[in-house]
Length: 596
Image 1 (cartoon, rainbow, N blue to C red):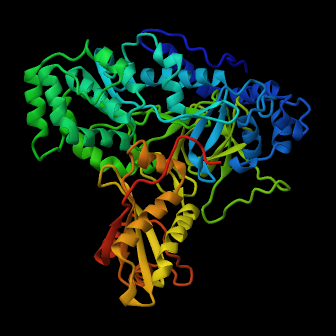
Image 2: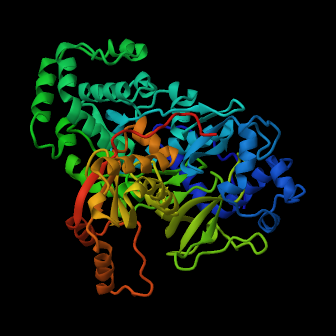
Image 3: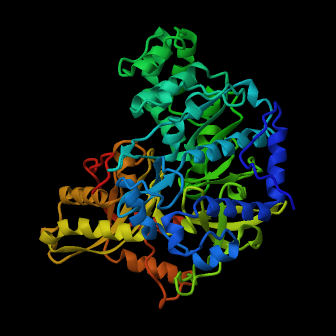
């Protein structure tokens, strides 16, 4: 069957029909396109050091690839990635030059993972972005009649010892010419000027974006951020700063705390005295009731443009409170490693969201997943992976990718479930990130990391002859920003010499210092995570927890203390046994530079 091989060309028409036809073409030819993508990747990278190790000898067929190239994790690739980061420009993973590293929200040894990228990857990301609105236009009309209030931010970047930039994928995109010099598109007009989005100071950026959104309140048709947590931080920012914003709107003068010259320059054209608007904002924000505040201030909002799948689902009730239950379409499935696909039914309920992985974005394989029977990935007996076109309805898989930038059979860590098919292309529900225990924003903390943090903090208890008997945790998202809560049951040999409140506060900080750089950046630079909290519970609390689990049918022989909880009756039991609460007294150490 002949298939289109110029996978990234997207004819532009006014109604998006060409984009929809291209989606149909891609999804009707899933397997031949996948075969061609793999052929292109292997042909392009045939002379790389990595592929030569496995003696492919220029072969570009699936059978040779699957029989010779192993499934790998980041730790397997880390030595090669560190060579590139340290300045080795030979073709190690990819024949094309590595243009920069995209920093993953996942971590290795406490630091963000470095994902190699090449210049043409930006075209792939731009391609997927260009399909979003044609899909959305099928479900929501007149999106070209107004603007989007999207709270978009850049994050800190650094340089590797070899001089390559290392930064998050969205920071790379917002700083690219594709974004900064994007052509006019009536479906993608932002209220935020580029200067505000590109300002590295989070306060000045948020303040300016909120101010512009308020000024243009009647033009706003959709409100959003990348993650649900980001939109809730924006609402919290409005709660804390509405009076100064009202002053600026009333007088037509910009807050002196906003010092960025580019912002001040562009705001002279936007900010004019408007006492009537200032009075309206004051009346809406000065009261106690913030229910439906989004639709009260931005009355023409059609939907919230945020990610609410995976760990972000915990924010749905709060978003519903502030928005009056506006739709929350999740449009795209992407990561630092690769952009994968789209939600072709974006107005579905968050619990029903499924993503269609487009076969031209990379080569995709799937490792059957069962929580009760983990698969061993031995190089001597490699597992049999399933191709994109061959996955089975209802089954769970771990996603494995091969990319143009040199990742081969790489374990992303996402667990997906097949929910259906669009033509011959499967659709997946994002279940979770593998092994992630706690997450507030883009942070991901696993059980081993939490255990290590508790061990480090416990050192402060030794002089009091006190130890942590048991612990569990949960991500508290009722406050904005959310924060980690750790329940401790302590054993004290001498109750007259118990740890002081000050010491337990220091334990909170010691835990935070032990957590990964993504968490610490969220605390220090992004203000997306609040201070960690330790709640000390009465002795015997965890025995009660076990009794409760057994009363619900758990086996006493197989019972293990859950290291993360979110079931309401368990939360109520734990909170009813709390003796004292303690918070981190300061922010942990963090800098953009990676630890050596």
